[in-house]
Length: 105
Image 1 (cartoon, helix red, strand yellow):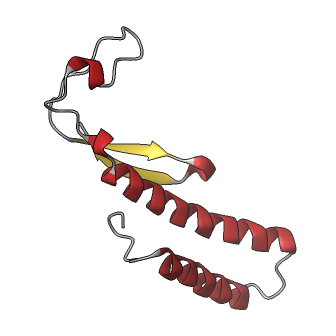
Image 2 (image 1 turned 90 degrees about the vertical axis):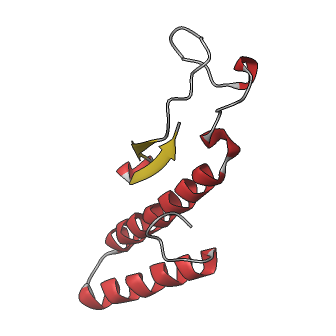
């Protein structure tokens, strides 16, 4: 999975969310349904970000070095095919304002 996830599959990720929610519920026994939903959504958003980062990193689209210009992504402003200049880490924000890092050319 993505760096730092520690999960080898989705079942482990959801088991960790379940355990985390049980612990949260013990600490917040009078929480409303809305508060429960918010806490669960935060945990699920983190797992979602981890899965998305893993899928993005596994994509062949992370590297376009050696590809013909017609197969490379283009600049959204000028439409010229991009040139490979090495790998760079990008920090992105997903739904729920969850941060994720990916390494791309």
